Image 1: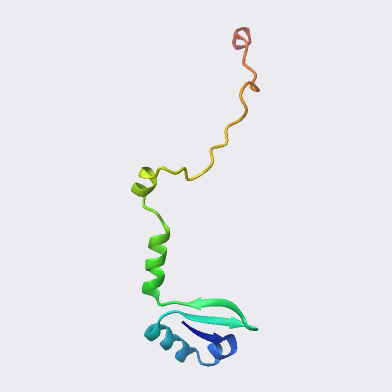
Image 2: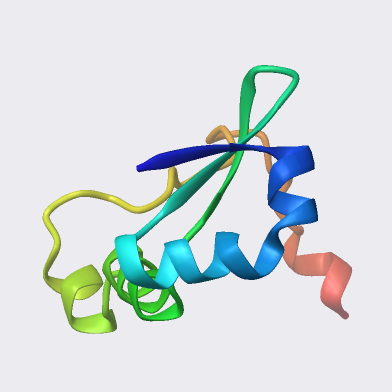
Length: 85
């Protein structure tokens, strides 16, 4: 993966984009720190598809997807039978 300072990526965007399409993802740095990555759209779509499990995968999974929050037991008040009349 090639690295481009943000100033070069801005000034030579067409070359930056061509390098992405020909060589693959291109890393952009700002003040020497990694800031962003430009990836070809096909690779982006593939990564997004892999990141989202299908409904079938979710239903067949043996792991819970979220914690189920239940209120503590015994705290609810019950209605008395005479209150409904």
